[in-house]
Image 1: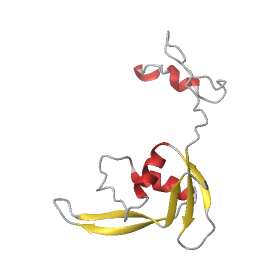
Image 2: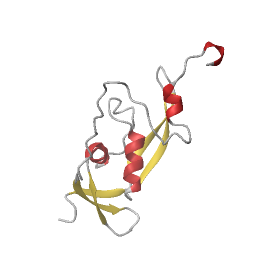
Image 3: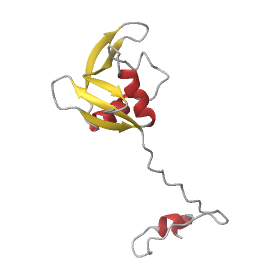
Image 4: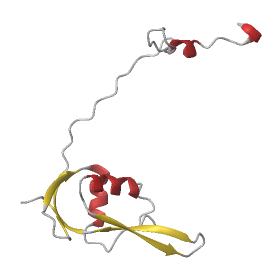
Length: 131
């Protein structure tokens, strides 16, 4: 090597022409990750306020936790549930399923004044689906 630099075998392993090999530590085991099973969540019936057709969705895990928090509430802010998960990620996932959720920007005071979002459900949501 030039300039007294040590060779890095990991850098060489992924270069073109090297067969796409990756270097693993000697004596380490390759542990396959378990694939997530098709988890079916709870069924919900969503009837949008704007008169759109009702539809059913299946929601599981933290997204179901967030949806349950929005049902019957006048809106939820991350400040109300500071120990909860990242609300924006769950609202994004629920919106992708077609659930109408508005974000209202509000000012807050206190030791760290600023702005926060309030997530408001704009639909009637009933757990249990069409049944």
